Image (cartoon, rainbow, N blue to C red; front, side, top):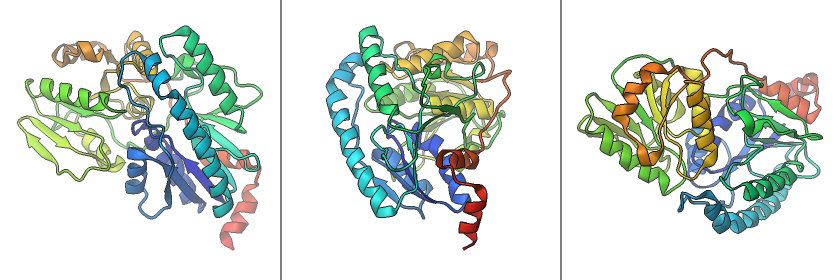
Length: 363
């Protein structure tokens, strides 16, 4: 089967959570044509060196302002133009590569009227901090996901889901399916070489602002720390600065090895990061991207369940945060992880019997 798998470039989270599905389909001998832009494109090409990874136009949304509605008003028209452009490109890609189905991770324009398609998203509702804009954006998103045959939500089935109200919207008549916790990180939380590991990601300029703040504070604290800058396009070497070891980028296997040397992670409260930490069992200090109300909602929700230490960037004090970790549990504590069979989900989407695929693979 030929699968077109476009991925949103909004930090590295979408690419990270898509990789387990992509690799699963490759193991079943499907052909997967991936696509993205920016750093997500660079990450996919590094992680999938033998696969075709196409370039799509970028949404190019930046967090210049901490008040999200201003960012949306400034970059929203460009995003709408990009969605139209990627839809036209999708039609060309479907024809050129004889695509049998589309699995789109939050790329709303990547659908085709003649090809079964699924939209991967945990964000059925949007929080901007402004109720009128929330209503408008939710209506727009609902009109977009009606273009797809199914919605795939990378989360546990409620009530044990991490997303809470974000994925609680009724999507009828479009069916939604929960994929469970999706993470490639294969390690456990252990005390080791590093007192903590900071994982940096997300849109600029806030990613760099967070990096500078974390480096400044960790360099003045006792113990050794590692920082992963999340720059897959960088060729910078690994640097040792005082008590800090700074990695420009680590693939998922290398990141697993690094996290096996600590029991503490400092990170944004992006959803893919939360899934990774729910899988590994690390305690977390979460600092949402300023103005990204989804991350604020998730960090606040987990904090109320005593499953993280939550600090806003403008009030970040890692020394105090370390002390508060004694009173919290890992993310997802007390729940039973579940996972969807990705191949079965694909077969349900395309209505193709396993026997038919087996015969095709043999031939």
